[in-house]
Each structure stands twice: as structure tokens, then as C-alpha cells.
Length: 102
Image (cartoon, rainbow, N blue to C red; front, side):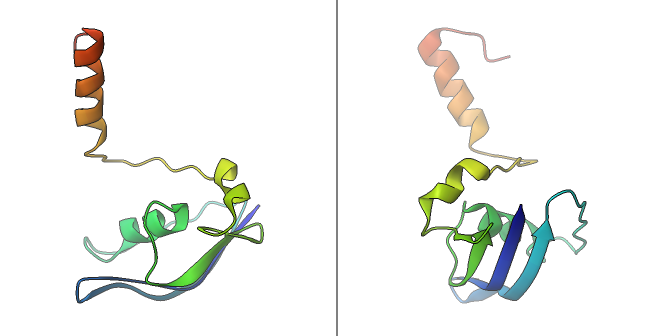
């Protein structure tokens, strides 16, 4: 399996978050991404996983283009270290099911 990003860019309002990112990630290899807080690491992973649309550029998984070829979806997955959405969703589900939140 191979993930390829070509000229990936993301702009939010007037802030350029990602600029011309090109990379290839191969299955079975461990990669480390190092950068200061706010440097765009999380945004890059959101872009690579399809959680966020791109301003420009393309992402391919085994030659299938993300956001164009829906056959790529079953092959994608991401684990977020902090997800602010999970807590409210779980709280709502617990309320509906009359379960304790903890």
C-alpha cells in the first residue's frame, strides 16, 4: 500500500496552513513527523485521511484519488489523539440509552 501526496495546499481564511506538500509513504515503514506546535502536522494528517478538504493538490492511496474515487474509503483509517467531537457524542448516546457517562 502506498500513500502519495502531490502539491497539497490548505488555506483557512487568509492563513496558509499547508504549502506544496509532496510525500510518499510506503506500507510497513514507520515515519516520524517533527515540528513545532502549530506547524501543520495535524492538518496534514487530516488532509491525508480525507477528514479535511484541500485548497489544492491531490492525495492518492494505491493510485486511487481521495475525494474522487470512493473505492479508497475502506482502506483509510485514522486515530486522533484528541477529538473534541467524541465526548459530546458519547454523552448524547449515554443520555439516550440511560447509561452512566463513565
